[in-house]
Image: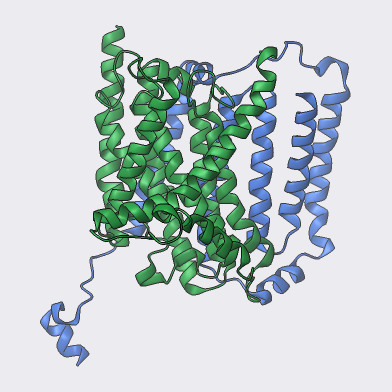
Length: 320
Length: 181
C-alpha cells in the first residue's frame, strides 16, 4: 500500500475535479438535451454549441448579491447549502470507478453511501426551516417526509444486491458481477432503487419539495447567489452519484468487453443513466404529494420486502 | 488512529454539552447530530465499522430528522426561548448534577482501578460477526424488539386512522349540505 501513497492524492484530486466539472457541465447538457427532446434549440448562442452558458451561469451566480434575509436563522441558513455538497461529495469516496481508482476501499462502502444520503436530507430541512418562510417550510416538510420514506426502500432494495454479492464492499460487489450483471436477477430491486434514487435527489418527476408552480421554489426560495448555486450543484452531483451507484450495483461497474479500458465503460454507463434522468425530467408529470407517499409505502415497500425475501430464499437454496 | 479517537471523543463531549445548554431546540438538535457523528467515528476507530454506519443511518439520519420534522411544525418563537431560559434556573441543575457525579465517580473507578482493565485486545467487528451474534445468542432480544416495533406500528396506525372525509362541497351527503346552508 505504501507505493500507492502519491497516487492516492492524485485519485482524490481527480475525483473532486471530475465531479465538480461534471456537475457544471450537466447544466449545459440538461438544457441541450431537454431542448432536443422538446423539439427546440436550447442555449446555442454563447460559444460553440452554447457551451459557454456554463461559464455565464457560474459568473452570474458568483456576482449576485449574497443576501441573508434578516428574518432568517443566520448560522443554520449558511450551513444548510454546504451540507448537501459535502454529503454528496463524501459519497463519491466509496465508488470504484475502475480497478485501483477508488478513494477509500471501505468494507462498509454501501452503508457509507446510505449514511451520507440520509445526511443530505438535513440540507433541505434546515434550509427550509431557517428561511423562516412558509413556502420554504412547506417544501422542507415535504422534503423531509419524502427523503425519509424513500430512504427505507432505497436501503431495502440494495440489500438484494448485498445478499447476492455477500459483501457491503462496492469493489467486491462489482467483482461479483463478473458472470452476470445484477440487474437481471435483481430487476425489481433495480427499478425500486432507481425510483428511490430520483426521489432522494428530488429531481423531476419527484421534485415535490421545490415544486415551483405550487411552492415558488420550495425550500430554497430565500437563497440567492452561490448559496443557491450550492443547492443547484448538489442536485446535479446527486444525480451523478445515483447514476454511479446504479452502474456499480446493477450494471457491472467498470466491467465490459476488453476493447475499451474499464474506466471508459464506467463513464459510458454513467452517461447513459444521466441521459435517462434528463429524459425523465422532459417527459414525466409531477405526482401529487399524497400520491407520492402512497405509492412509496403501499406499493414500493411490499415489493422490496418480497424482493428481499425471494432473493434470500434463492441464495440459500443455491448454497444449500 | 488513537489521536482520531481522542479528537472524536472530545467533539462528542463538547457537542453533547452544547446540546443540553442551547435554548433554541433546532440548534440543540444540530449539536446532537454532530455528537452522533462523533460517536460514529469513535465506534469506527474502536473497530466496529458496521455499528458506526448504523449509528449515522439510524440515529443521525432518521430519528433526529423525525424529531426536527416535528419541532419545525411547533413554530417556536423568541418568547418560547425566553420561557425556557426562565425554567432553567440553577436550582434545576442540582439533581441531575448529583446523579451525573455518581456516574462520573464510577467511570473514574473503572478507568483507574487495576482489576477492571479489559484484558483482551481490540478486534474488528464487521457486519458478519454482528449478524451472527444477533441471530445466535441474542435471538430472543431481536424477537422482542420485533414485537415492540410491531406494537408501535399497530398503535400508530390506530391513532392515525381517521374516517375518510369528502372535502368537496358538491360531494357532501345531502343532510350535511342543507345543514351548512
